[in-house]
Length: 335
Image 1 (cartoon, rainbow, N blue to C red):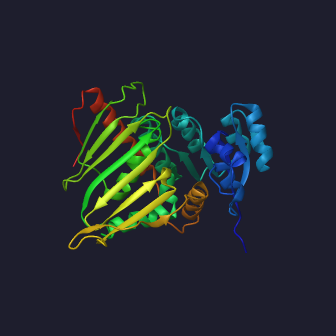
Image 2: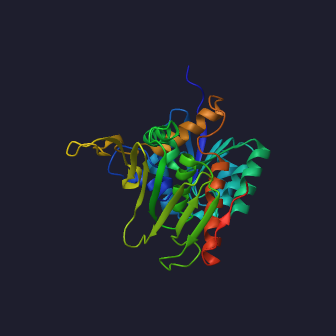
Image 3: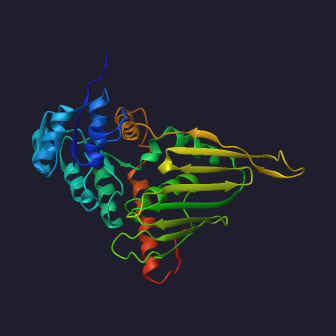
């Protein structure tokens, strides 16, 4: 017998809330509304957007029970048990607080970054813990099978001693850079020192900085910022003594190149042809919802990306911004 479905609601019906799946070129599930609609253990009871036409369109597309333009009215009337927060970054903290205060809320999937300040993120995490609500952050790579295989390869020593780590991103240090910080933390843990500079001269509240993370074992990881107005990029190149991992096409392609004897030169070792660990990130938000449902069902002890993980990525972004504002003065993390 199938267990009863959790009542779900989405706040924010833009791209990651609904539109990517409404307009998508394939059958994969990338949005909160699409994931709630598809998952057998969730029922999309309501959607909310400040644009009434957008809310109506999303509700009609997903056959949601109701649509709203006021989040609090939706929380009061629909009484969802799981809430997806898919609004602009600056609204995450306030709307998550509203969802946490709603008496029926059991779980929340908040888009990244968890908030725009560490103080707000800490308040969200503390309120969730106090209420006993599961708060998960949608750093999508945490829920992707290919990335899980790649991280396991590094953790199991498959690349040998790591020699260099270089990432490239665009779209703001908090907004998209938080994905890179989370991936680097997942791979290598917490750095000892953060150093950043605004090479592009973007300024503003969320520039795409160049960042260097230094680890206690001597490893350094570089994050190079690029202008989102030119094109989108998210790549990571990890080279060890036994091979190389290349995360390309925003993570849709992950290649593992092993060190092998050269076919051309004697006594020469070189990187061989790449073996694909992944050729696409599929259904990532569906997997995030599935992960959250598993926690609510008592199958998993905590989400694959916790509020603490989201906070740690945001804290690295804040430290990087401070070091850039101080003229590229390094900042050490607490031991």
